[in-house]
Image 1 (cartoon, rainbow, N blue to C red):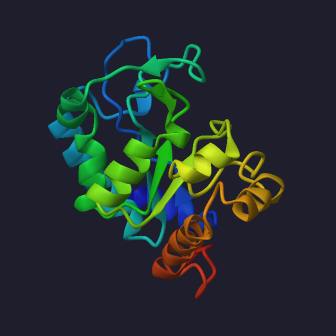
Image 2: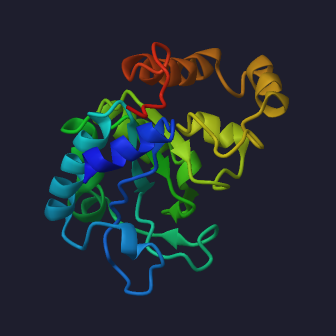
Length: 213
């Protein structure tokens, strides 16, 4: 399935597949359950790793989403998933951890929700401490479409790429923040390196992504 998704992306000249989704089925009314991988963290991990490997074997970056504990669509910009550390580690995080450590996924997408009172796109603990430091994730952490709320907080909180456009993480907000010391130059440099690293690794600078052969 992953290879087929990658082939389809290449046929369309697409560089990223915004999948797989791997949040746990915690509520039957979650509007994204149709694209997630079930309620068992081990099974979801195994399926996610295989799908990512298939997609990325075709020269397309897969995206592990929606990081993390994205359990409902209703009021998704404001709802907080309050989860203790053990529950995060045993239920919610394993598919993402496997995606990083075993499948070497190129991108992670932060969800709209808050976790323990902090929006995921500015969640320093989960983005920086867990994904980037503990798991040594070297790829891109991007936002879901319109899930960025504060450009400076997002930049410091581990978000590398705001999608679909830089409405908050923009020159207007970040250049003054760098000059004032609110955001370090090293933080910006790391984001640029992450994006360029994956573009080079996946050959985006060496060939036309469209593959119609």
